[in-house]
Length: 90
Image (cartoon, rainbow, N blue to C red):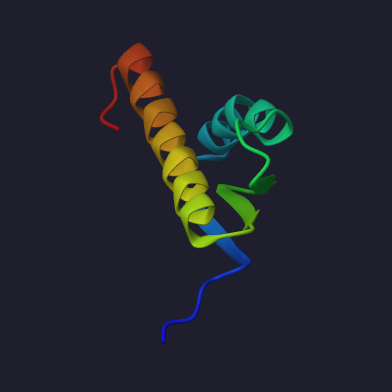
């Protein structure tokens, strides 16, 4: 019989190319941590120099995976947007 994940936590450390990019991503994602689309996952974000640290806690594996995917997609979108505006490669 397989076990069912009732609760899970993950901490993601996302290294970015500069403190400016880290601050931009942090400011873009911070509102998402306060107004999550689901009550099944909670997220906290920190900035440490050029690194964004995301703490994601969820009641089940599906919610944990969905929150991770959403935040990683948003980080990627932020990087692409900045690259588009500045003419740099993401």
